[in-house]
Length: 99
Image (cartoon, rainbow, N blue to C red):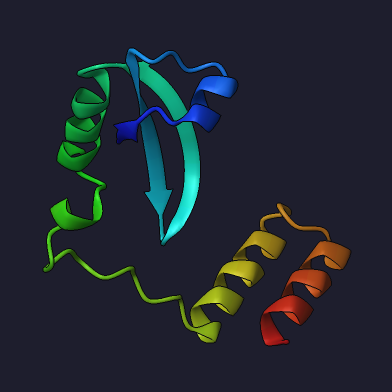
C-alpha cells in the first residue's frame, strides 16, 4: 500500500485514501484506491490465506505420478470393450497416448 499520488488522484482516488497495490512475481497485478485501514485488512487476509506462498507447508505431498503407459492402455482397452469408446475414439486415444 502507498499514499495516493497526484496521478492516483487524477485517476479517481481522493487525498483521504491509500492505494492498494497487488503484486505477483515482481509484476503489478492490480491497483485500487481504498479507504485508510482497508489496505491493511486486505493485506492481512491475503497473507493469512492457506494458498499464500509463505503458508504452504514445505512437506506438502507431491503431485501424484502420471500413470504409466501400460495402465493407460489397459484402461483404454476396457473402455473400448465395454462400448464406452468407439473404434475410432479408441484408435485416436491410443495414438495420442503412444505419441
